[in-house]
Length: 330
Ligand code: SF4
Image (tube, rainbow, N blue to C red):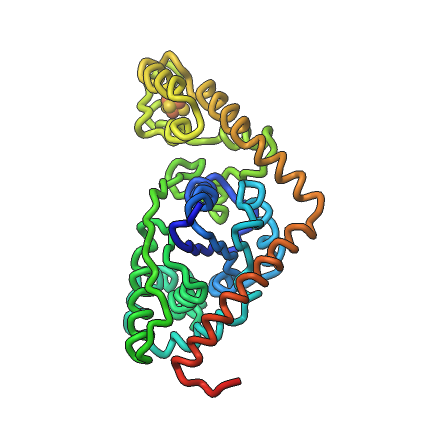
């Protein structure tokens, strides 16, 4: 079947993936493969802007790739690779940085947030992050970038850089990427307050054992106003209920919605049901993951093979870019 276009997405190597990663990105990555020629990149260079201690970088890259493959990324069609394995991206980053307005870069909300988060490590990489991100996308001539709404300013910025480059060098070499805004649900952690995140230790790992998963689920914060078992609850403010909506059947969701409000259902039973449904949902993923993990070389080979395919596209683009910029022939 003819594909609708070429989609690119990158994610930092954060190691074993959690439910937030799954619902916010991986699920969508898998689905996009049916309609788009997909290129998925583990952006290890981007990670260096915030990770000071890199001793886990390789392992995190491996674990993340393993989770992607187990979740249904199909490397025989989709290109899966590591950013630093395609050095052309740093060359394009340098060239694009010449048309990237510094004032705008330092004005982006994400940059300001990072400055707040790590005032002692405001490095050049943080400022240039959106330029490297633009290079990632346009190097592979991706016309579609699936993003959550919070990433919209970066893609708009990428489009601006592409227009500036094409205008300044009187070319049409680079393609303006289009945003494909996806419904990224805000997945809260087990604390029921903050976004699910490994650094906050409020996450539930996809690859956890059923017992570990149940343990984490039992720690989930529910409706804070429901103190005693016989207090009626309000599912609308309860994170466990939000999760039921994703992983439980419509009949179960309806019953929970009804019985929570009358206190016919207690939070312990409600959580046990969620843990059971979640474990059932993750069973095939965990089986595939365990199978692939038996031969780690397969994962690295997928990444190497992906990088080989990515480099072919990257070099074609760079030949055109060098020509447009009039860099001396090699
Ligand atoms: Fe939340 Fe379920 Fe408890 Fe209601 S019964 S407050 S939905 S955990």
